[in-house]
Length: 153
Image 1 (cartoon, helix red, strand yellow):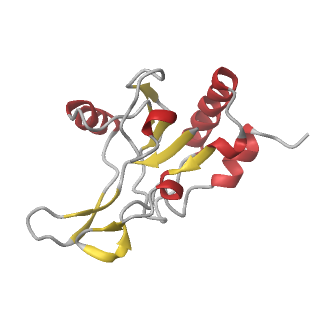
Image 2 (cartoon, one colour; image 1 turned 60 degrees about the horizontal axis):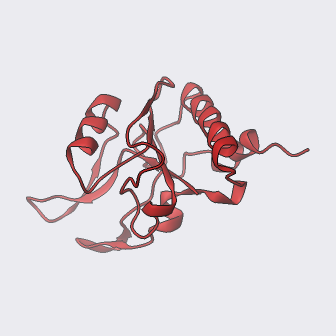
């Protein structure tokens, strides 16, 4: 399976204990942060301009979604994940290309491409009314992307 994420999203502020939204950040900063933490991982990251970078090799586990990391490939999109931040066409085109390659290499079916929010439905510890993971967010054109990777014949 492939799990699509966004770099931004909700978290609990360590100082106040209140929920805050973390902005998307940059490709370089996100990769540096993820690669510096042994409990985090991502296989691929795609910037807004379509620049794609690999991190953890696809044959290795990248810790990106509890309970599913050992059987999935993680793609992180640089985006706020707040449902308002648009996904630029260059980023979507790079994602479609990568998903097509993963489909060929690993035989991944359309149903095997999911959003992080489809798998992690836990609530935030600092606000039990708010979901912990909502990425890639409502602005992500999920069905349109899948239609480009898996066109109807």
